[in-house]
Amino acid sequence: MKGTGFFGHPDKICSLLAGVGLKSHGWKVDAPPGAYCDTDSYEVGLGQTDLPSPDANLIEYRVQGYQGRAGQISLELSLTDISHRQAAKQRFIKTAQSLFTGLGVPVPVGLLAAVETENGFRSDAAFGNVYLWVKRTVSPDARHRDRELTFIELELRDRRAEATAKATYEAVFASCLKLTTKYYPVPPEELTGDGIPKFYTEGSGEFDVDWGKRQFSCWVRSNGQIEVDEPTAFDPDRHKY
Image (cartoon, rainbow, N blue to C red):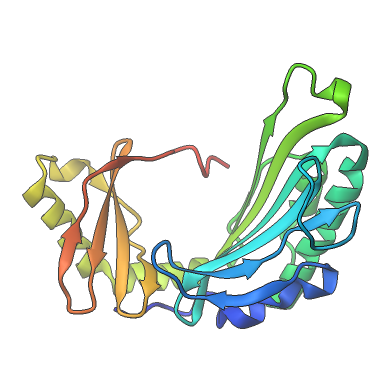
């Protein structure tokens, strides 16, 4: 099995945001969960990439994929120090703008305003899927100490490449569904999934097979062998926006 293009060679993406303070140690190919950018956190307020303090506002980006390809890009902002909240969001917006510019695509209309107001956002623009989600955790005495936690994550996926992958691997995914019902007493009509594989190493891929709030992992090895793992629970609200 071979993957589709996605965002191209990841080494360029790993170093894309160096101009705004984030730095990468390069592209690492590891055992599952796969290949990724080895990056530092950017501590807003100190303006450096160093070991962050527990109360810092942090920006970090991740590029995940498989050998030679980037399949998903995530830009994360953790807001803890309320006194530097606005500065941290502006840094995040500047970083996001640099990311889109580096990829050669326009910033989706409404995205930056959603960051400013800390609202969820979803765009299905022609160049890919863009998600923004916000999670907050506030302790009873957090504001008294000028501390709270707001987690903002911007996620990019290449929709065209995913559509190509789905069409390319339609027959393979059908085999995954069939094998799942062979080994587990699951009604075939209750199995779903997007049919888009994730690649961990060249020649090996994984499909997610959904059954209600349970999920099977279907592995397709380089020799064509298909294996199905036992189901695990998953969070259906992760992409609710």
